Image 1 (tube, one colour):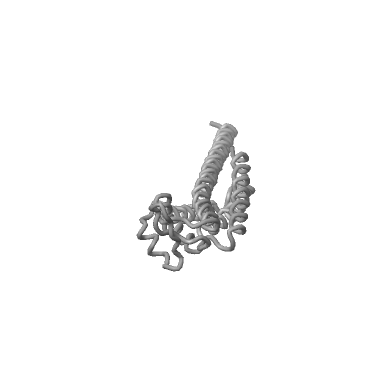
Image 2 (cartoon, rainbow, N blue to C red):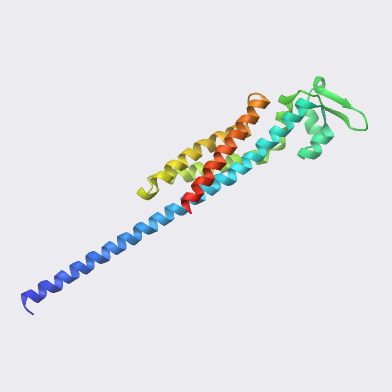
Length: 207
């Protein structure tokens, strides 16, 4: 075998090897991008579900806060609707906050005692609030694993951080109401609309 043939064979091996390595590298890059995209989608879906769960808690606070501003509420009604024992509710209310009803309804919470009403809702929704906070922790961990995104998904990652900031604020105000009823309602409603709109827009971009 002469020298030219040997050089040609070596050149062929080098070319084939180079092409093979390029194809392998390209395939690995695509796999990594696909895995990142799936994790990104899953994180957005987690935020979407967690947002709905937070909104349910906020809605309950909003509902009973508004009701106690308008009228007194029997403990028996609160017990039935919030699934919390009457004696547990009564234990959170001092005698000066009692309202008295006829027709067998007995004692209840006096109109305007919204601080106590919010406390009753918080106790009734303890499990749901814990679940929302656990979801928040899982989402925070998921986002931390999405750092250093592929070039293709850098904008999506930045959008995710923007969504997380809105979500983080929404969880805070939905689980720990502050301010007046009107302020709380405005904050909850506007935050939910902004967050939902942002999530839906990004989901379309990722599909």
